[in-house]
Length: 65
Image (tube, helix red, strand yellow):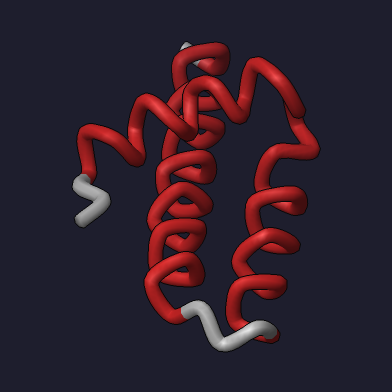
C-alpha cells in the first residue's frame, strides 16, 4: 500500500520535475488510471496530487511571510 510518507516523497520529486504544472500532470495520471479501471493506481495518484497541492500551498504561504 502507498502511504503518506511515500506520497510526500513522490510529490516532492514530481514538483522538481514538473514545477507548477505538477498538479495538472498528477491529475491527468490519476484520470488515466481511473479510465483503465486501475483503482489502486488512481488512489495513489490522488494522494500524490493532494500532497503536491499542499506543498505548493505551503511554498506560497512561506513566500508571503
